[in-house]
Amino acid sequence: MNTKFEFFFGLLRDFMKSVMTKENTAKELGTANIGRLLIQYSLPAIIATAASSIYNIVDRIFIGQGVGPYAISGLALTLPLMNIFAAFGAVIGVGSSTMVSIYLGQRNDEDAVHTLGNAFVLNIILSIITSVFGYIFLDDILMSMGASEMTLPYAREFMEIALIGNLLIHIYLGLNHIMRASGFPQKSMYITLTTVAINITLAPIYIFVFHWGIRGAALATLCGQIVGTIIVLHHFMNHEKPLHFAPGCFKLKGKIISNIFMIGLPNFVMLLLASMVAVIMNRSLGKYGGDFAIGAFGIINSLLNLIAMIVAGFTQGMQPIAGFNFGARNLDRVKQVFKLTLVCGSSVTIFGFLVSELFPRFISSLFTTDEQLIELAALGLRIALAAFAIVGIQMVTSNFFQSIGRPKISLILTMLRQLIFLIPTMLILPHIGNLGLTGVWLSMPVSDTLAALATIGTLIYFVKVKKIFTNYEYKLK
Image (tube, rainbow, N blue to C red):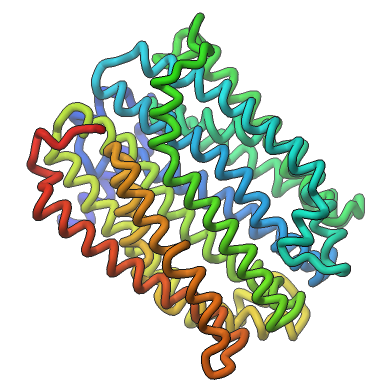
């Protein structure tokens, strides 16, 4: 048999064996084969994140087919607000899981346990604050994000239920990040798949049988979140687990909170900027194309999120491996996992580019039977994802710097794509030659290209000048 195929099937066999027998232990991050580790840690994350994205797509399909095209537009309007809530959860989940990986690599179990407890408390505090604020100003926020009289009722119905589940989703996602980073990627995957299965099962019942409309889709998601939260809490309450809740771990410590927020800041900024971009995008689309253009963006964003979540699965798999080995000063292993993740992530975005260019109308027709909405979404897909093939480079590299404790670099690279390049081009291009709606779509590939070029330049500098893969004095700051 061909050597490459033997290697691939060996990876698959080892992954299945690990799923069926035992979870990875943290020490294996510093000794096991990098390719096998990346498969073992990435594949569960890919399945989990892709499954989450798929059930969002399924929700949109159910809503589009069972409620109507304006409901799709209303759901698209909730994206900026959901991103804001997710941003607060991400800063805790990503920051704490990265620090847990590094602490475990340094054999610092005490700080790893305190990081777990502090992350739990911080998630509760932030989720309550954001939920209360969201309820008080819900209509005003949605109107500022581009809602019209036709779409506001749908957006409001969805968000009222989503705000109820905000506390659960913070706890569930935050602890799930830590579970994966502490050596339980398969269990993390199973929990996510369970929540997805519950949502996909209940959504069509609530929408088509009980006729609860868009509120039914939100309730189905809430039911999945309840189950997921219960399972992750049970995991960390089990004292037989290597990392678990312990007396005193819930007492907030300035050093740990500071590390969590500094490491998680790039993800927070990324989601916050994504929210800002979505608001500007929705308002621009409403101005140049009306409510259906906003709905078309909702369809496009479904595909974008699916592809991005698969890449995120690879970066999540990379994170504990890179973090542990960087903490242990195994720089050759850090370099190996980065290069392999870069190849995998870029392959995924290239695939997303090809699908969007070859089958835009088929993808759009899955969500709606309205011909006008299909045409708008198909055109938008082809233009918006025209440079998506190179986005993987930017995503993997920015996450890599975060994984080795360089949040400032990660933050800068994240801001390049969504703040420095995308927002200005989105505001300028529609006015050039009366491009209008086409100019809004064009802003995405233009910013993707500029950000990728800047990321490549930054990476070359840190490899050639700072020598991040060979300089053992280049440590966590």
